[in-house]
Image (cartoon, rainbow, N blue to C red; front, side, top):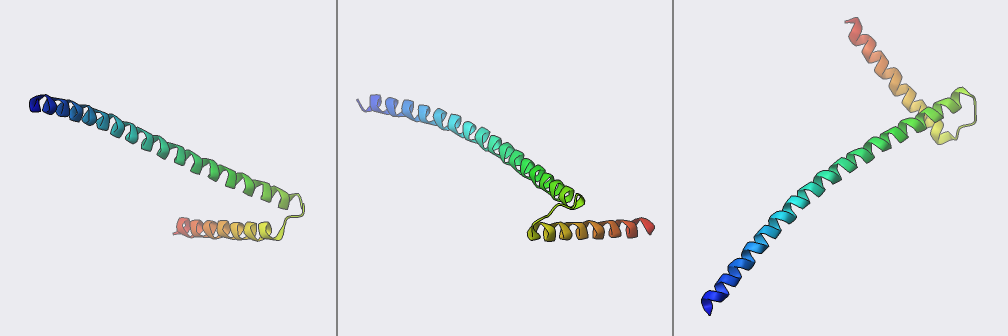
Amino acid sequence: MIHEELLKLEKLASLVSKKLETVTAENEQLKARLAELEQGIEEKEQEIHHFKNKIKISNIVDNRPVNPEDATEMSDLINNYIQEIDHLITYLSE
């Protein structure tokens, strides 16, 4: 009787071990998929940000009214681009 109970417990332990391996593998796959999706979302957010900047620049070029926050942001962005260009020119002239 004790021997039968031990055999049942061993069988259950084996089943639990196999299930744990399966769940662990599935968890790793889901983590990898989540990382891929998060990276995709980040890329899409960057694309949206760049697209918004293009719209703001287009509005400025077309002399359309732009709200002050966007104008300040664009001014800062343009200043950063100018600084980067200056750094590149300095680097290339050396």
